Image 1: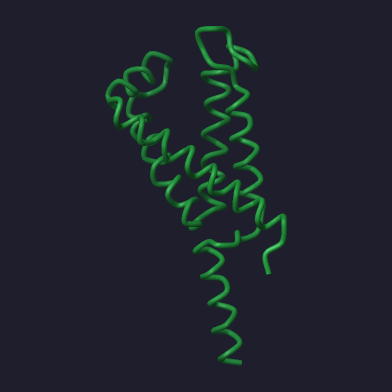
Image 2: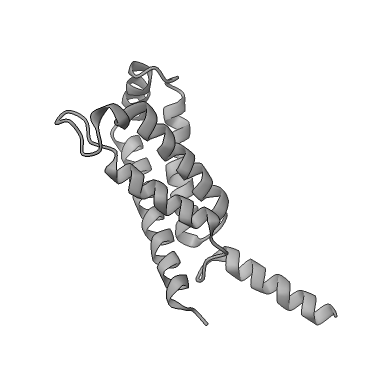
Length: 141
């Protein structure tokens, strides 16, 4: 049976997955080479843009279907810490007019941390695999 907390975790997982998936797709659509150039301009290796975009697309899809939720959430949390510290912190919590603030990144970080600490989510491949393993163990006993 799914309780309120399970349903809340499901909503967070789907929402976080959609947000990262869309952000990753936009990076590719707007020209990943431009994003790589921007990474270089802020002192990060340009090739990291490709890794970040792939993480956002693949990780976003993984969260939506619910596979590898904890691992993907940890990776997203690390990504958000990096974004806050390297890019957004200097702009302030709400931004400075040129750069967005880090309030949205903080919300995504909190969601990722919650998901990384929670049990397998309902309506997910992770939960289905766990439930199948329990059924198979009970059959062999």
